[in-house]
Image: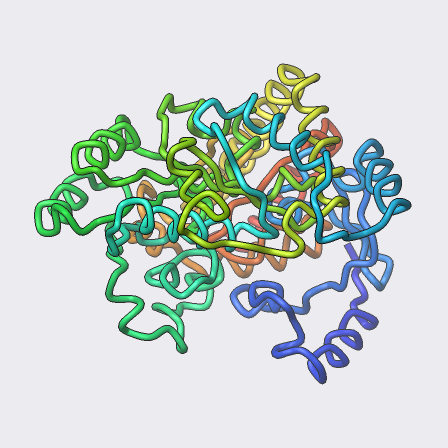
Length: 434
């Protein structure tokens, strides 16, 4: 389509006067894909609208939480009602336990939980709790998995760290990073070796059960069960980071899909209905190590914010009431989109590996299977950048990074399937090998 970005460019230049790079999160700067980032004015259903009046089919959905589409009426109404009573109290409300009850109904492994304001907070707090509960310092994470921007987790991380090609982050003391062991994803042998080397020093293993922050990467058969067995054997805790997968892959997240019971779970994105919200929870005996019951301190004035609680209750209530319709529909729509574009690429003679789990997917521009970050990194990021820009010109907005998952919502239907396939035909024909 013919796109003007005059106003968005003006807004970007203005933002750069006040914000580093003109953004509040690095991937928004489009450094990995090139071109000008549109400035969004509003959204509805499956679509975003920018300051120049352009309309885009959205495939990142605020990075996952918009599972019911943008401005879903019951969620909007719940936020409006809550806002009329006050935006923040710094005191307890009944809505906190209301939302917590919905979460525990869907996640049997979560006996008790605590709300926070972001996925970063959830993971940071869960790791602190695991260390306090076990009395150990070391943490195992996996290359390409992103668990927020707390110091200990910015070691061989995914998401924007991978997008920008940064191995870690300046400002993280070596003394902090030394307690984080980053291992290859989908490699149980590496985990066994780490525990053999430090049998009584590892507090926890934290993992994205389905990686979304290096692009979509599924766990190998019995991989998660293997992590469960190894951690149990050595008295370490298993933390499933379901900030992205929770309520997206199923009502019970990835742990329901893959039948694994962690000690702790971190949640975010969907549980706030699009508002800032996260949570960590799990075994009652572990959670009761938190203050005011135990010695591990964690706090937050905006934790359990009433607007986020209202939006989360409306979202999870709808998912519970319409479970089969929602998840069957997402499975069908996402399959047709992901496999449809893969077929278009084959017809165009372009190497593309498609990874999909439920309503998460990634098109990797590589001819090899993608099972970990090393294989994801073989992707032709320049080709992805050209594809991203071409799709944006056709009115389809993909995540602006080869190393991020795309997401489908219940607002994506037949028209949207047809639109993305036609856009891909035009975009990939421009990149056809001679």
